Image (cartoon, rainbow over the protein chains, first blue to last red):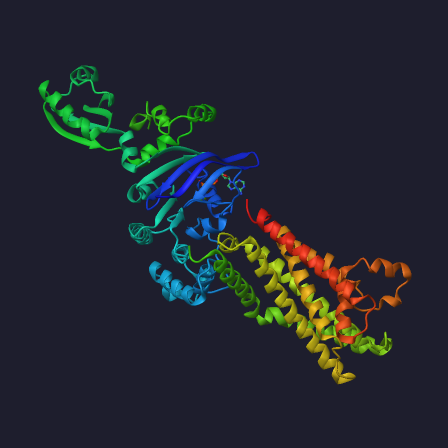
Length: 342
Length: 265
Ligand SMILES: Nc1ncnc2c1ncn2[C@@H]1O[C@H](COP(=O)(O)OP(=O)(O)O)[C@@H](O)[C@H]1O
Ligand SMILES: [Mg+2]
């Protein structure tokens, strides 16, 4: 099976600024892939290289096996892009803009007209078909961007920050539609800095930070790598955490044990798995448990940890990443992470 | 894939050409009213009022002498303006991305922009010829078209040439003002010193030689030959040189698109 996207050591410099510092990624056909990163991470630059709006300074990118420069026509025909910024022809009513876009992809005029109608219905703005883009409301503009990406029947649908400035209803609609397309076989590449979006939709996410891929994993795996807090209320809490530490099993997933306002707080990776052992050991030591709560780490916390920049740490980070396995930065970010630092 | 590569390119090229032509056809007031008014004024002031004093030039009434020049002026400036504006406006509002992210070949993109802009030039040129014809016929005699094949060939070549130069202008511009500058400070002087309003014979030998460096002289001369059948410079040579320049300009356009000049970061 060919991959929808194969990118090797992709680099892009804007003058002195290195927006992409050697990005390598593989997006399997049919997957729902998230590209997560803070503003300025290089997500849009990455995407624009694929569609030919940005020229790479180095490296290779292939879309369904077609090199984006040498074989640009085949590569571009497979991609439907809903860009972050509105870039729509303002001279024509929107149904004609769609017909033109399909036409540029070689779709004959009559078929293009049907495609345009279908795309407008899919995103729910068919009744606005004779309106020009400038006259649509903000939400409708976003819907239209998706319609334009769909009108060419893409095999790889790329959505660059689709829910920026979009209300809840529209976001749900977009998510439903895109999920349905993905289930019917369209590969989706979504960039976002809304973590919830990635958590709900993506099979796999790459975290991009300052032009580098920090890690590639499923959202679940990422959350497992974060630290959870198990908060236990005891009937007779001891005076110090030290006496409790001795009670607990030697579990290397546990990173910290403390007492906060008379409650025992255990910080651990995979808190859900640690909790039963914890209960058993506390019980065995004669503590009566009144209440227990597991505060699962959110993907957002993991994300913030992984893309956090302390002053002047850039060089150190870069060295740590050089040739290191994808998950190396996670290990360096973990100590002192989680709730303790907030 | 939405179709095989050749078919994609033909459909894509035709779609973009159609889009570009519709853009100016759907706004007839913007496209045709300005050249209409300007040329009615030119013909009235230069042709009728001034013409009475000038009398004949190279054996024809002055108004008839300037008609080919005014046709050239309108045709080339509209070709140039349409291509440069369309490309620059698309870059400015970034909707040219709709084209750039498509599987059209670079030659297909350039071909569509050039052909549609040349179409506008031809239509405006035709409009000006019609205005001139109406006024000249009313005053003197019907306007002759002595060498229709030459007339057509020259009109085609010069509109294509200025359309492809307009593409370069649209790519090079970084501001709407740049477009105005190109038109006012480069195009107009070339046209006005291109023997539109006077005969080369009226110039001193030195000025005449300098004028021959101006490509516009050959264009006006060629179109005048098409109408009147008299030429100051060999029309076949003019046509060959202009066709060569057009081929070169289109080649440069394709190269610039390939390189992404003004189009990609
Ligand atoms: N055309 C450009 N010229 C110069 N710098 C740019 C350009 N486009 C993007 N950048 C810079 O490249 C970096 C990555 O930008 P971008 O790809 O837009 O990030 P993201 O989409 O992740 O927010 C940023 O520092 C941005 O300022
Ligand atoms: Mg972006």
